[in-house]
Every structure is written in structure tokens, then in C-alpha cells.
Amino acid sequence: MLQYLFCTFGKHAIARDRVWFDGVDYRTKCRCCARALHRGDKGWTKARPEVLGDSHRLPHPRER
Image 1: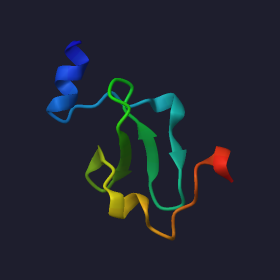
Image 2: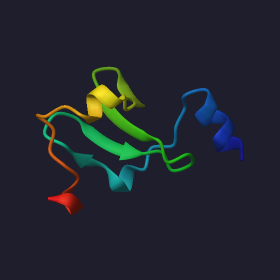
Image 3: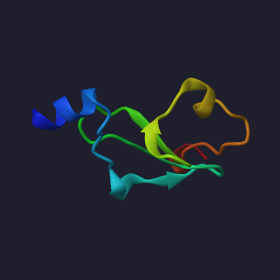
Image 4: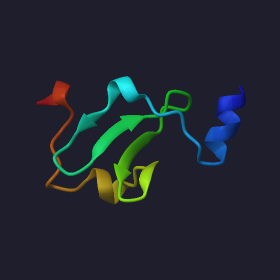
């Protein structure tokens, strides 16, 4: 419950055991709210649709 409150303020719980590389950035999901996250120059942030839809990015390893 407390972690969900952190998620609302942008402090997501990174699922470090489920991180994968998409050819550009590292990606994972939040353990609490399951929001897609990516690690860019500023650290882990919410993945925006324009980031996820980039044609230079590889699909998830299970989808290859």
C-alpha cells in the first residue's frame, strides 16, 4: 500500500530481475503498479508512447 503511494509521486519499484535491453534503452515494469519504465539519460522514467513505438527498438525477448 505504501509503495503504491510512492508510485503516484514517481518513485516506482524497479523490477531489476526483469530488465531487458531493447537496442536503445533498458526497459522493465514497476513491481507495484506494472507501469512500463525505461532507463534513459535521467535514470528510470515512465515510458511514453513515442518512446515505446520507436522503430529502432527491438521487441521483448519473448516476442522475437
